[in-house]
Length: 590
Image (cartoon, rainbow, N blue to C red; front, side, top):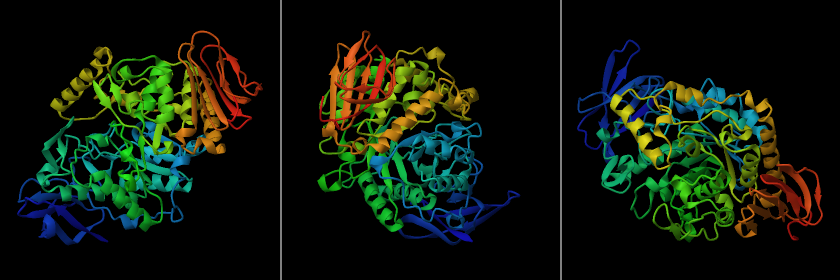
């Protein structure tokens, strides 16, 4: 079956498809000019055909809208026929509602030794037993080289060829749906990688009217931006429609410079809802934003953009700073139990308050937005990988503090998210790694990492080399660990916590007003109660009495015995202790 070819090239006077045969012979086909500078060749190309695109007789380049780059970012594109894939998920109507979800962030290249979509499939039953509902894949759009985080992708619709290409991703999604797991995909629309990026040669995809940490901004509001937006919108809808993805995680939306009357994010939310109705399954959009502005997830009827959820970095920073004692970099604004309590009750610690890190007032209150519109986490790819040596919390926190962090994440009013291996306290680091072939770019990446870590006070001489294959190899999960002493008990703890979350409705209702927090800053303890569940964490240096509430201790660490009954609602604990209690009074008493 032939697939029609379309290319947007507003500045070109002639556009040709260069068909590349197996013996490297080339055949040129001239496209017809159409409306809005779209060039067409209705006859199309057979699925599996390799091809390039030439503008005005110039250098033949890969197709910016390529669906497959079997030889990487500098090789020819490959025609893909989405209709040919034998899906088996015809009865799939979407994962559980967001409020009941548990996300699991995964980097395909280091999740297994094989580093492929197919190899991920072999561990899906582990995720089901754990209590995960959504597998969240870090970016898979074609990026330079064989290894990388994926945030420097340049072919936004082509699944990375090393991971298994388009069919490999489809098989993984199909396998997830067969097990009742939803699939979330991390997509990057705020910039493209510098290596192999030819978009600017095809049209006004970038603008110097706005600037970002990566250079000129993606053109979302200038001349020609209507087609640039269409390119990105079609990309998002294509992941939903053609790859059966259930949710998209939108990277760093604060870097989408957009002064349009209808912002790109709002337009994307509207079109996603329309496609959701057409497909008959729920589709979700989840933003990463450091704006502390809940309008991103507020309903459009009340002036919001209408996205489904966003990551909650304030909760992470407050929790991390309390457990670890770190105060450098962006942790300088955090460190008190009171701030952690504020995050649990109000999502944002900075909600129209002064931020010393920014030297200005930051954020705004979330208002009536429910807690389940925010994802809460103890670790993620950024918070591990942006450390000097990519060390996980298991390398620096004692066991009890790891378990305390897990209890607070699982019992918070947010949707929990784990980073791969966190559920067993994985010891493998997750440093930043790339696979570039341009010496100047390699040097720039190395120097950029050194400058970035200076703000944290880390010794740049201990940084792993991002370009060294050993940095990526060290990040590969050790799947023997979950069954080993010291890891199996952490896995059991997380599994029981997520089972508790499914069992107790108050843990999934997202009612921020129903979150009761008590803190004794001097003694070093915090108690959180949500309906019939109480969590007490003691991080002080002397014994303390935690007013968790009357009930039965179901999970405990740090010298506390599970199963005991708290008739008077208080429990004596030693330093570094955590208890999870099912309350006998449903949360009404003290």
